[in-house]
Image (cartoon, rainbow, N blue to C red; front, side, top):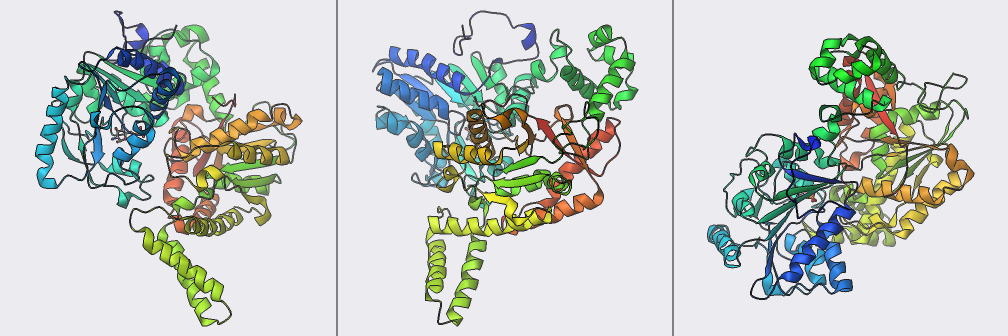
Length: 636
Ligand code: GLP
């Protein structure tokens, strides 16, 4: 039977949870716990009456969306009524009108309120349009209103990457009330894609305080995706501090964290399971543990001695494998075998310990790039090597990437076109096109959404740059394809909905190209991100091709971007780049002028990989691009 989320029962913490100061329930994905939580909450909602309503504190963001979807389903299919529910939302951006596409008011109505029978006068969301001078009184009224309804019965929370709950940014006190707050840099950066640029993200918000949240009778904080892993572990296992407002929940009587397995990766039970209980010392576990130990005590692998293992809770490895010497050699070899200058396999070489097979000598390689720049940034050097080593490489840009292109670029194009067309009597259509684009850009204003013709033009601009970048990686122009997946074309970041057409388009390109090797993004840390969705489209497409002959011979390699680079123990293939090769990759990234891609950031990531390998005792390279092999490619 699944562990209850809301009922913690009367039990003592298990050894696994010894390090955890907040009850944390881990699930393999985010959908099942969201459904379960909604079902558990529905029991309480059904018990509520007019006189004694169920008071819910609600959160925005992508995290609670599956929970809201299940509530809607329960309402539609199982007669769950919200007539006796009162809701209080955590927060709202200050300065946004309620009908702004990014306002939390709009979000809550789109995601939940418009689909259930919750009476409008039982909904409370801080009003972002309140005049600065009136905010203080307004916030006090909000607090009073919660109290008048008997306090919050169940508070739903997500967590921001600064560890904030609601918008209680670092520095918020444990007894802080509802108030206006300045948003942290990282929070604004995380919201930048939603607002199509950091500059458009509001600077202030109204938020319930930590004190308000602490008074709720039950608190459930959900966190999905590897992006949240670090902050979840700090909140659950670290000291209580106002730098991470979620850590205050350690003092709450009835708080539970619900996490999927990726958001749980930094908890000690997963990061260093050998510290928590007995483990099976598989080669992968051994590599993880030894790399952790070498990093911790800052020694290269081959210099670790028995005492290092004993003093750091790894005595049982020695007992099982002889002594430090043997363990060190084993892991050193594992790491060494990940390094190759032949990412498509080395012809004629013994490939028993190489990351990729030698045969077939000339492979059909498909490189998927969610937005056109992603693959070049993550694996421009490897791309070039694959081409130069004679493989048949096709670069597939899954989406047009048009949301990334600045208005200025579209305007520049339209202005040049207008200048040319005006000088030539024969080009009235071009002139009118140029003017239409300029007019549309003027109309949409600061926070507006690009109309289709502007998005189309921006996509074309990026297409040209992608061709130049591919060429800079030695790829012939005909080997780059643009899928323009439909889910992206009329969507917004974090609001995309993957559809059947996206999967069919991906499946048909696989069936046509029958690859021996696929390189694709492994950036799935944020499950609502564009990269994660493109990855899902690929997995779905892939699972439909299971019976085709090429399928069993195809290997899938994952690359990662800057958000969550591969840890050293996760790397299955490390492709070193010489200083010249890195220079060429930087040059290729520079071709993406219209989206201001930071080529130095990409280079420094590759240099860090090299430094890390060096400090573990491997050879010293200028830079390394790293990949993980996808062992069990199955969609969830
Ligand atoms: C914002 C909201 C928080 C939310 C956080 C995480 O900062 N104010 O309530 O928890 O974003 O958002 P997401 O769930 O999209 O990761």
